[in-house]
Structure formats: C-alpha cells, structure tokens
Length: 386
Image (cartoon, rainbow, N blue to C red):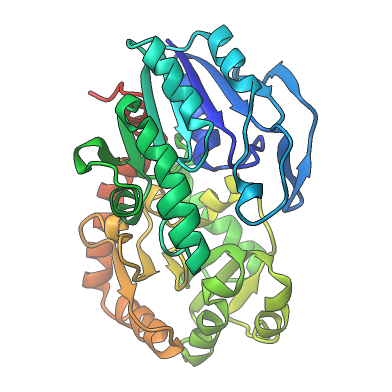
C-alpha cells in the first residue's frame, strides 16, 4: 500500500519522536511504501531553519520530498495561509492509496481533498493538534483565524475526509466545537511511544546504571520530569515541592532545555541534593529514564512526554486539563488541580507512603501501556486496525 504523510505545518525534522515521524516509520515497518511530503523547514538546536527542496530516501526506506511554499506575505493572518502549488503535482505522481494529512489548519488540505474527489477509492485522514491550551488564545486567533479561516478549509474538505483524528480528547472537541466537524467523523488517535525504543525488560540494568551515575541508592524512590522547560511547565513549583520533602530517599531527575525567561527561577532552585538536572537528552534516552524511574511528574501543560511515559508503563502525576484524562488507563496516575508545591509534595508522599496504593498504580500502568504504542496507533491511523 502506498501511503503519503503530508507534513506541511510542523517543520518536519528527522530523528524526532513526534507523530509525524513515528507514524510513517511504523507504517514502513509494517511493509507499506511510505512517502513524507514536507515543507522546506527543519529544526536545528531548537530553532526552525530553512532547508532546500529535496527528494531522497531516508535510512528506514521512507521517501522524503520537500517542497517550498509559494510566496508568504508576512502578517499574523496572511503569514499563516501558506499555499503549496507543487503539492498537487507531487501527490498525483506518487499515486497514494492512503493520504494522512498532519494538521487540519491549512489550505493545502483542499489539495488532498481534491485528489480524493478524483480518486474515490483513496482513503484520506487528517489529524488535529490544536486545542484551547495551545491555539486560539487571543480574540483574533480564536474568532478570525480558527472560527472563520481554518473552519472554512476544514468544512470544505470534510466531505472527502474519511476520518478526522484528535490526538487528545480536547482536540476532538476542538474539531467539533470550533471547525464544525460532525462527531461521527471524529475519533481519538492518541500519541504514544516508539515500540522499538521501549525496553521494560532492561529496567533493572538501566536503574542500576542511573543510580550509579547520580549517586542514588538502589532503594531510592526516583521521579522523573522534563521536556521544553518553559513557563507553562510549572517546573519552579515542582522543584519547590521537592524542597518540602524531608525524606532524603525521594529523588528527582529533570531533563530538558530551559527557556531563557525561566533560567533564573529554575537554576536558583537546583541547589538541592535531591534533584539532578541533566540538560537536554535524545528522545531515545527519555524512554530509558521513564523505564528506570518509579514515577513521572508533569505539573504543567500537556506534552507528548505524557503519552510516552504511559507507553513505558510508569505511574504518573499529571496536571488536570480538560480533555487530557486519556492518560488515566485505570488508576495509573493522579491529577493535580492547583498550581502549588504543597499539592505536588502531598501527592508524592501519598504514593511513597502507601506501598499497596503504589503497587496498584504500577500494575495499572503496566497493563495500560500497550494502548500507547505506535505499532497499533499507526495501523489505526491509516485504516488498518483490526
């Protein structure tokens, strides 16, 4: 089966752990011919940079075609409406059986819809990564960009799209409430972890190595957190929570790059023997830390690391956001309802202090992990799930 993934909104970058990487990679592992069509932007050292047009085969056999946008007029609205004239020609030449369009927001979705109209046997899927926590955060964005412009393109394409996926329950709601997509055409397609890089059978060896590296005792209770450490992730209150914990055997490993405006509030709180900040790490290493640790703690805005932690079978503490409780797979996690160090500290002490409760969390986490692995997510994404 020929599958095209159209990634024109995300600065497609090789070797990352986003779903625009992991879905095509798993499709290729499953034996399909896979093409990724991306724009001429990529991420280097956390910054989006230009890259030339190209057509080449990646190491996993995926064909990568980069095509340029037409001229972009700078401006809040005009700079976001990006036409890609070459897309129609590239799709026609590729002759897909399935098109997966990453991101509903864009006029290029109409090109995919036109191809589906002319080739009714082709399956067309589109996913949505927008909700009210990361999009439509001001009047102009909410009422003009999303409720008028992106809604127009989504509704015009809707008759030809077989399924719209929201990657969070909140993003399913956004498709319906903001873009007017019928509920019966919307499904949840969770993000998750890469099966190839998750090895729970290595937990003992990984834990021993990490304890040795950081001077932890084998019996210490190890929590882990990380990601892009910006003001939305509530890392200062997490660090304050660990200062409140008197038990010297409760440790925290923190990874990620610190946003410039958060360096002072975070770095001044790192002089704590219970906290090890290890800087930015490769995505593969994040899986190892999740597997080796006892608990994942994310007290701020959602990131894909939540789902990756669940995929690793580790219990978690997550901030409560409407439409993100899909990470609760039956008792594997606790939710935070206030932005306070006291609440985080109390939640950790409750888990550490009740071995029976924590044991039930671990068992639930272990059982629920398989629902967040890309071997099944990728099949569902392209209509191949049993």
